[in-house]
Structure formats: structure tokens, C-alpha cells
Image (cartoon, rainbow, N blue to C red; front, side):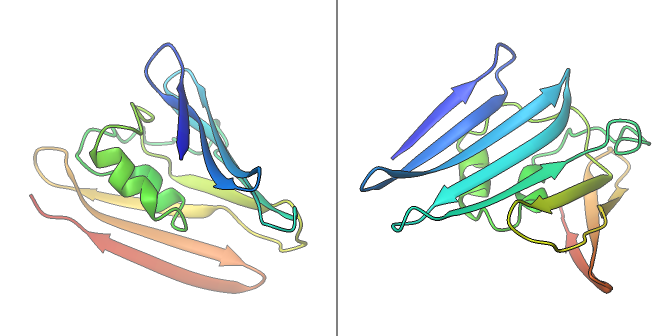
Length: 154
């Protein structure tokens, strides 16, 4: 079972999934005006142990080009790839209004890990109607680099 909480602008700011036995997964999203700023995830397993992380966009550098978030693409699903259900929730309208612009750099911090992670770099390509046609995400941590590439057609 899910509980959803929205701010006055219709942006999803909290999502809780109840897992039984009193345990729940809590996801909190914050915005600075119309810009997505942070996402916090904390999940408790049946033993009461927590898995937690935070995604953060540096507002000074993370929106350098102010790419508009105007397509029918749920950019949040690509920022948080382990949240498989978010894409479905977006398309049925539960995710509410997301950030007005698409982030270009997002940093993932693990609460219980010493992993050194650089910001994920998001690169976009658009068609002549300003709809995103390609998304490339460069992930870097502990000397390792990985690229995730997605293409979209309309």
C-alpha cells in the first residue's frame, strides 16, 4: 500500500510504501522553486535494517542549460533507475508535476557506504519540437565509468 503527499504546486514530495510487519520504504523529494533538488530513499527490511541513499542536484551547476522538461518522458525514472514502479506511477498521474527543467548532473550518496561517486552527467538531444530524442547518462564511481543510453521516438 502506498501513501502519497504533494506540495501546493502538485509536486510529489513524499511517497511511503508499507511492506507489512510495520516496515516501510520512504521516498522524499524536495524542490527549490520549480527545480528538482534532492531525493532521499530509506528502506527498512524485515530485520529492521535500513538501506538509504540521497540523490542531489547542485543548483549552481546542475541546470546549466535549462533544458525544459516538456515531453511525455518521466525523467525521474532515469535519475532513479532502481525504482521500477515510478515510470508506471508517472504515466497514471500519481507522480504529480516533476521539475520544470531536466538536470544535467546528479550526485548519488549512499548513507552506509564509503563509495566515492562523482555526479552522474546527463546529456540530452532534442527534435525540432524540443522533445527529447536521446538521453545519455555517464556514471562514475571508484574509478569506474558506465554509460546508459536511451532513445525516444514520437
